[in-house]
Amino acid sequence: MHFAETVLDKLLATGGRYPLDKVRTEGREALYEATASGRGVIIVTAHMGCLEICQHLAESANLLQLNILMHTRHAEKFNRILRRLNPHTTVRFLEVTDAGPAMAMQLSERVAAGECVIIAGDRIPVQGSAVVPVQFLGQEANFPIGPYVLASLFECPLFFLGCIREGRGHVVHFERLAQRVDLPRKERNARLALYAAEYSRCLEAMLRRSPLDWFNFFDFWKQGHDRTSRT
Image 1 (cartoon, rainbow, N blue to C red):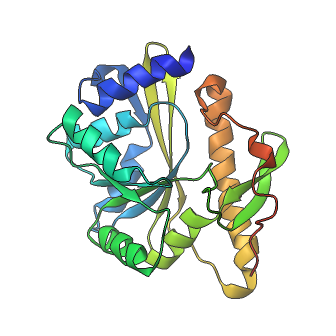
Image 2: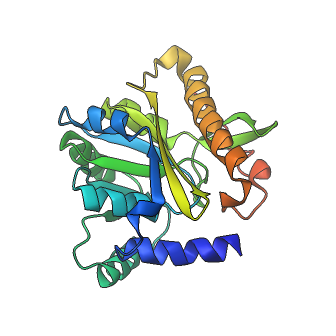
């Protein structure tokens, strides 16, 4: 029931019809400050709450250009649906199932232009990617390293984004994870684990406030055990 209600909110937010007076933000000033320099950021998020509200906020304020990475082959379909619901949308969905040099260059150009690249940090792509084990809600779990590698490559700040239900509305939470992600070769795995642990900490804090808002409907702690990151 909680998820079904959130789906309705997602449709309203995507169509630009969710009432913004029901939205409270936390930490967005730091994000605005980071993008004010003209360079973009990497935002690592989760399958949590109604993140479409963030899109709605960004378009209403006209301060952030969002590029949302998807690990499916349906990005173009999402773009078409989004434009049907909101013809004036500026949000872009980008397909990254077959990520390669061309996609990396495109994302680098987006960040260099001052735009935000959003990627989920709580889902391992079906085709596989390197992961790093960290503690999450009292048990070790594997998290993808992609967001931290991208932030290192693009030499840009890294932020956490979460959204949970609060009363009759939602809270959108931003938190700076790193001003710059540094991955020296000899310490690469250890540094990746530190950044992933910071992400895990933020995700935990949000879910303790609203446990039903995490929509990963599978045994998260058993995924990707054969794909641990190696130097």
